Image (cartoon, rainbow, N blue to C red; front, top):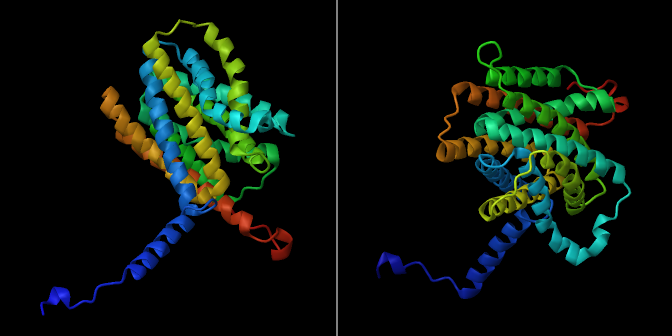
Length: 328
């Protein structure tokens, strides 16, 4: 008897059992609240945001970025409408309307600055500098929430700011308006991140995203009217795509932060720099320089360590039980 038939055939029932075990393991790994599911959701959000940024850059050749921001919010309602049809106005039920308004205002400032920066700055540099938002969020937590930050996180913050200087090289290269706008956006977005985290304790991701879109439509309309130009049908198609991508990206990012540990999901955010560099080269012939990559890596390493320390500190017992505050 040849060797290939010496091994007994497996019964159909054993094959089915193995398939059920494999399917069960996959279902468990992708169950709500699992780390793998949260990572995949964040990964999908980086793709959505990167495609959004490239689309904004493309459309900004003909339309002002402020008008693009308005249409991004207006068309963003298309993603929200199915939930309205399913849940009705109950989707807007909240006891934190004030926080939603604050988040909407911060997001409006961040979006207007960011879209303008995308129109005049290489995508890779925008992506690298936008990683500073968690650094600013830590500083805002110190100033507004009284959070105690010790040596390790201060060093991480310093490294992050050093990376910012490497990326924009003030004194060695002209600091463009786009770089300044990205940093202003990062500060505003840092405030929004703190607000989102507070809201996500009691509000669903859909409710948070819905309020953002509804509030930002009137907030972005005023600036858009100052530069209004009636878009063509082709431009409306791109604007609709921008609106859908932006809302999907927000939903995915919020859900990822809700389901997974920050230290687990935030490292995936680095893919934005990779996608931005690839899309910038492919679509706009942009070649990111070495300083952008070095600065981006320094900034991202800083923000990742800050997220790691914050996660570790949340799991430590209260200072009274260990005799002294934990170092961070």
